Length: 608
Image 1 (cartoon, rainbow, N blue to C red):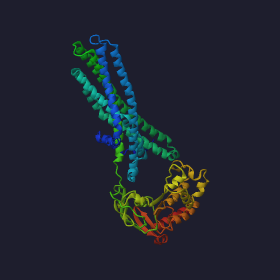
Image 2: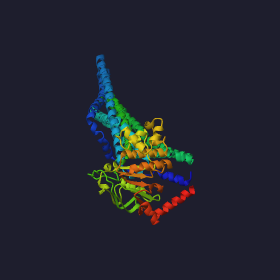
Image 3: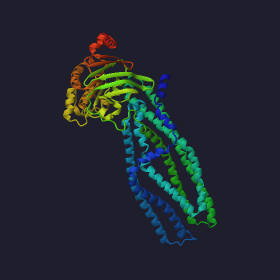
Image 4: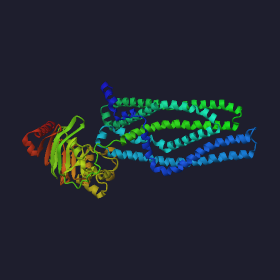
């Protein structure tokens, strides 16, 4: 792989996600996650009661064991009564059986609530992304967006299903154990608790490193998904240029880096276990050393000593689980930051608080002193002025990059101008609701998008409540009915992802039918006939006469023969309107348009 290619690939996926690694642990993020639990507070009441019952059972059993030893088994204090022994043993068994059923009910409820919370988060994230402007998607690979909705949301699943409740159980259990130990014998309990601050100091030291490690894992997974999406979408180009080996090499490098970052994060997680084992061992050492002294001096009984030993074994289990829960929390924190980073994105094209609902459009359009740039300091349109009367067909021509498609983007309000005004029927587009505008604008692109599903569903996308007869009528009008009928399942033919079973021309005809069915007041054709053969184009031109009648239309075409009958032709060059007029009038001027016609004519002559 060349040095240039390596450099390009190494920087391809460096974008805003890198900033996540610099953020501190943010408790506000956890509070935001908590908002998703609020609607289920009432349903959590039985869970909390069952949780308290479970904690009470675990606190009661060691006391019963110690009491049994002192009253029945210990030869110095016990009476050896088998009846008391049977009562205590039966009580303990009954408590564990009840706890088993309580846990099953608790887990079932928390799983249902947890899955609903995850579903709500994923729905909110997807809904928000649907509202974001084109600038948001311009800056990010599709795979980066995909990983937020899938991997990052899935990373919260364990946290919301049982993680939070188990954490609460362990916290309650720990508080209960500490309280019981200090109550039973304050000196012995305090001596054992000495190990807790030590463990806390060591684990806190690891906190920052573990969190950053998991954030790095999420970032690398996002980059892998971005590359996978790009590789799959561009597989034809990769194979056409025999770049499979280089692509595999680069993916292997990314995959290896991801595995290494996971190893680092997982390794830091595992440090918690030895710390807990060491502190737990130290706690047992204190218990047996100091506890033996207290037993020898008759300050505590054998039963009380056994109570302490049982409570100590229970004490380190929740701490161990809390350590694992903390690691899980850090993973969820890294994912949550990335999720809320997207949710905090505001559309660059935003509606006013009370936007005007655009009435049925007549189609009068004015562009007044428009200035626009995709990147700061690099203007694409400079002081563009254009006035279009309702029902006119306007052709936009010019070299690639002259600003033709940008005008279309502004009319659809995919972007807002930096300066100037875009008006339809006298309404500034920044004042009207986006839905009321775009519902009356139809657009057909050169690279039209076909969704997975049937041909009928793809046409009906222009009007979801259209009948089958209306769908078929739209297809007939654009001469798509014949090829659709010739397919084995006709209109019910499944077209697969991006319409792979259809030719480019067939996909274009379906997009025409879709636009016709939508019946827009303003129609935009952006190189819409570029992928259609000459014979089909003749049919399309006749259909367009019907389609364009009574509508304001904008046509972008490099094949200039297709726009000669437009009411007005606007010639763009370097973001400025250089000429405008009819086909014949512009030819008489012998300016830029005349040069474009002449160049295209010479090209066709050379081809022939």
